[in-house]
Image (cartoon, rainbow, N blue to C red; front, side):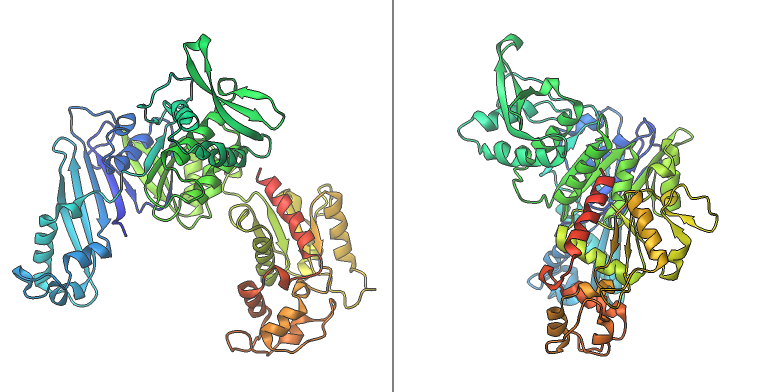
Length: 566
């Protein structure tokens, strides 16, 4: 386990005064928004400076004769604490056994360290010790002594390898052959990296032929499909090599004749597969900086790239994303391990503020000149009667399509309540003031309605019939349950197995909850509510434990949500 970074502050550099600007509590995904020249790139560089990667650092902060200060705070990993205060160590101020005398009290150690770029060496600024029990006075002096004697504990808590940067100004151009050029943030060296991989006998060409090609088609979907990535030498360009693509139609396309979006995707994939050699494995460690990926990208391609980053860079990876686009804020707003920062100028000095609630996010959008309707609002709304429908719907989507779409990111679920349905309409042209126009709230929507039929001959009531007709006329998905309620999609075999009911005879128009009410579930507790039944189904039911037309209906919802987010 690595040391955990808590904050980074940059000061005494250009627009960063003594107070400086601080990145607090960085997460796996960190999104920085702000106007041009507000200081976003330099803040990202301050974090990158902690990796010690001198080859890529000049891109972000040009070294000058004037010194600047980077202060970082981090939590020393438990493994380091155990190694310092291990039971096998003894002597000195802590006596016979360090762990017995000190380690048992320690909960965590927080270090604040400063790097003055003129002196280079990190210096301890503050040491905060948190205890499990008590606060033995003798421990602090001993800890300070040990930390100062172990300079590796003051090392910045970010690793330089693996890491890479994709710069805001980037391009991939034809290049003369070279085996020495490293891929640069601006795209220099990418052509050579692809050429070496495809032509050198010592390279694993599957990195380009299979893995890069697969991810390229994943990101460029649904409008582009490539069958091959290759390189060709052009004599009329000074024997420079250029990347080409073979399309699914058999034509060959030169990268120089393609748009900037394809070049951005290729920069990303070359770093992932040729730099990190990730293949099919997730990236679980390192620091990755993405500057203004939205440049020359369609919103659909932006979302594809942000989803790729979210799914590919996991574990202890740290991703820093600077952006002017609302798409990034929209996409990551529901992620539990994403943090948002607003970088701004205050009387000529750069400040960085972590934004938390919706109001602060909207304020950050205002600073970018973006309307609230452009981001932070759901791209699709699914209307259901109540909380149990939400549980079943999300579980069915997960069973059928995994994590391809996610509540909060790609859609939200709203409750209309049974009787309130009579006050809703999907008719965009209605003039009635007694009805709430759902399409005015969000035109991209769908609805789930329990049929409430007790036999096959029953018809829908007048309200449900009206709403169904309105949704279908508007071309929006509407799901009328094939059985009585959404619970009727639970297969009788699952109910029998889960609640020990033998072989219940239950039809699609019977009340499932009446059957299991009071029966003991897997936990041994009796099932007393519909929400408890839904929780049991969510925890245990697999695809074969559902029946009737659920898959057809859920696929229609999935297609609608996916289209709305494209």
